[in-house]
Image (cartoon, rainbow, N blue to C red):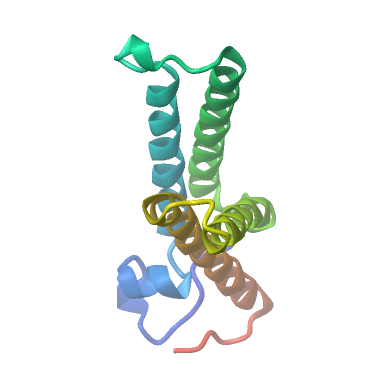
Length: 151
């Protein structure tokens, strides 16, 4: 089972410092929360309370599918949190998807095709989770190889 990377600061394995260093599996719970929040946001947009804001049928289907995909990834991160020994190989896919979401939204923002609020709520939040996931992967791989973690 891959555990947190070894550090001199063993007492802070689940605090903010450990989260930033990628030593806490709580990064997976951050992924769960982000994905489920995104799924709920998209679901509310597909079924608006104000029926005058109806979206085209194909766009509703796309949003509904995307909401389901976000919820599925949230469930996947929860599974990895509960089955830590499987986390690192599979988490590479989640980290890659989060990185893609950040890079794509950054490009759209630079091209002025995405407003600042959307960039922060979608792009930056995915970028932060991507960085945490990559740090977690790197920390777990360092720990598995026996190399001492910095700190």
